[in-house]
Length: 444
Ligand code: NDP
Image 1 (spheres, rainbow, N blue to C red):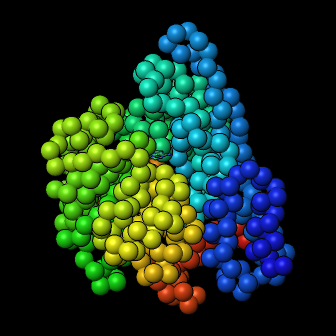
Image 2 (image 1 turned 180 degrees about the vertical axis):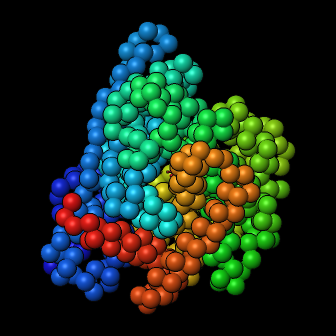
Image 3 (image 1 turned 135 degrees about the vertical axis):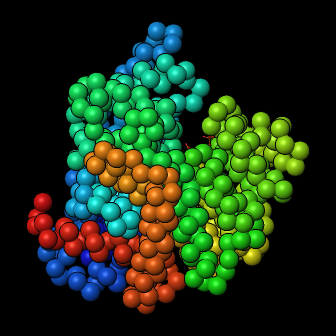
């Protein structure tokens, strides 16, 4: 059996009931096959792949907190410190009822390659809890965040592990967590990113993932003879990534006609009204039915359906495994040119392969949504030098990083004779730097 197949089998056997983690490892290892085979003897002797797929450290802990009725609640929480070969662990904290160890491991594993692709010195990690901030009062969210950070603070630090936001963890949650960290540790350091501007946050961090997604998509289209301007775009999700993807797409002259949330979706042929969307989602924290109620041109539909709308560009920005094989078929049938993943692993392997086989340009999340973590790393730099850069400075660095990422993965794909396969290109380019650092640092 080949080394890649052996390691994948080991991952399945040693990590039962973690299908998302298996899926992420399979996708990466499959596209690394040619690179591994070139150097199989050395990698095998050093157990490089076994070390790569095994987290350096996994923390599992309980989070007790008291709700508004005086009842004690208990949640499960996780921090997976996956790989620190090229820098301190870096990756977000997800707060969602679906969170379990397998999901955090899939996200942490992806993060290793994404962070490597940014060209910045950050290792891979991820964390979170099955706590659901939806429907909780501010006081309940604070009680949870403080209890969560009381335990997590023992394992993180500005030079060791720097968490950030993700699904369910926005500015409010980061603020409560930062306050508790500072109170426990007594130090004012850049231990979290996504902080508010008044206490060490970076301008453009809020916009970074969505903006970065569009910078990379624009470059991918341009290098394949297309212009983003004038294109019809469908977006899923209506959270942080989706909102700013929508805003930047419009700034670049595209028309965005859909957004969604976990209960339904909006079709707005006149183009999504970003100011209204922000009001509904960021201020009122309400459902998309409120958007439809406030805008004549918008139609609200229950359930899923974004991918059935005719478009040139599709940007999945909600969650994992939200673009399935039938969705891919609908996109191809409707003449879609490009799919770029704002979310982490939103497209199943089967759907990705179908899109690629049918000539759709496909940018994987670990490249396309790397703008968030790249700007987090810029926030770390600003905290270290105790300075704040202007919005324009951060945004222009972000744009450069995204354009460079696209060219790195394009070149890696060409070098290994897989021209246009940006999934392989991203995995290969991300892997080579980490593998080199791991090899140089010996068996640790
Ligand atoms: P938010 O919590 O701000 O928004 C998530 C959006 O996706 C919401 O519209 C939510 O709907 C929807 N959603 C969440 N879970 C599901 C589900 N199971 N089914 C359908 N819809 C769902 O998160 P972000 O925008 O920050 O993150 C979105 C994706 O982007 C995630 O995959 C995240 O890991 C990834 N990402 C985020 C980065 C960031 O900087 N924020 C950086 C890189 C990647 P509802 O409101 O109804 O829950």
